[in-house]
Amino acid sequence: MFNRKPVDDSAAALDERLVGRVLRASTTGYAAGTRASNLVAPAFGAFVQTSHRNGGEIDIIGLIYSIRIDDDPLVRQLIMANNINAATVRDQRENRMIPVEVGVVNVGYRAGGQSFHTLPPRPPMSLDPVVLCDDDTVRDFTESTDFFRLVLNTSEVPTEELLAAALKHAAAARPYDEQRPYLITAGRRLAQLLSYDLTRLNHLLRLIRP
Image 1 (cartoon, rainbow, N blue to C red):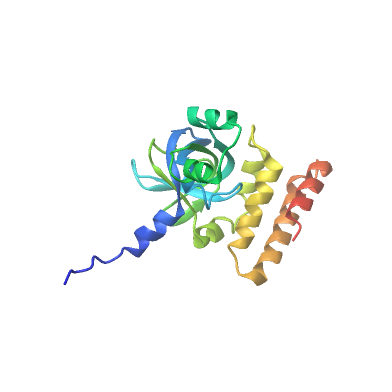
Image 2 (image 1 turned 135 degrees about the vertical axis):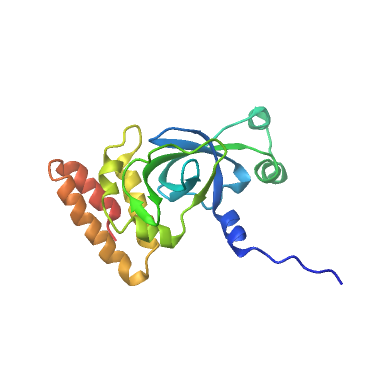
């Protein structure tokens, strides 16, 4: 009788949360690459992290702000075909390695069990794994609203929509009876930060309305 190898639950959970691996990076953010068949859980505004162990372990926390699916020569040929059957489309999506690029903007990092709501001291390295943050990490990181300003001041991303989506993810990571109070508290903080720009504030408040 064969001895069954024990399953490493932590490794299995990590695989389920895997978004991809770092392609290129800077202090402000990075791009992660994956394949289309793995694109199930990642969503706009989701919290992700990648660990950097060069000179001390740092978990860099970021928000997904874009998901880009590139084409390849076969896709171009299929688009030009008169008829594409369902089996061909399914094979293309599930079996072929269609490249996907996930854009992430950094909003902080964790080190020594503490959360810091500022840009990380150094970027991740190429091929570092990028995973979705678990609920405990999201709750801990979003207890403070200090990352709001960092998102609002980020250029070249849809800041209002990104922050609103992130706040909804942060609320969803909490027990049901805490979700509405969290969004109300976030709205009050946004009112302080954007008191000079009522148009922008009203748009954000509509987006996060419980």
